[in-house]
Length: 208
Image (cartoon, rainbow, N blue to C red; front, side):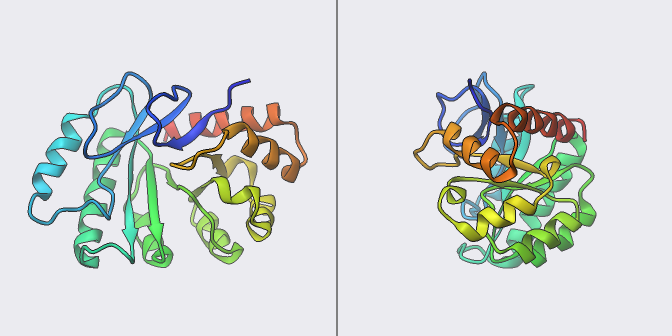
């Protein structure tokens, strides 16, 4: 069976959410669109937002990936301004936010109060205490390839509520079915039931 890939960078995958970047145009399949913190160009921020807003169609499922990154060249304050602006776009359009976050999770949590739509951390691979704090603040967590080999992350996922998770390939080259099979084993449910839950979670975030 085909499994839903919550966040990916492969244009040929139709059953999932394709991440549109600044060099792309919108697709006929579901996609997300946003300004990544590492892609912010302080000399043409307005042009970047213009690109973003002009490429939002009915196939746009979510805003993102956007967020905060401690390794990005752009100043933290500008990152925060660009992130907040995208949160407000998500509020206006009633679309969830797919978040990229590197070493800024507690700063990120502070932005939750501005969001009227669900927020999903993509590629989550941090320790369980961070997962717990994010879940307490009503974030969703999307897990990727690291689950296949990271025992600590497997334990984090085991304790995460089923109705708060997604699974993704991101830009890694592997089969999403392998991830579903592994997570089904960890959660002690069938891959089919896991997939059904993921699809229900998707409907929940799409409906705000």
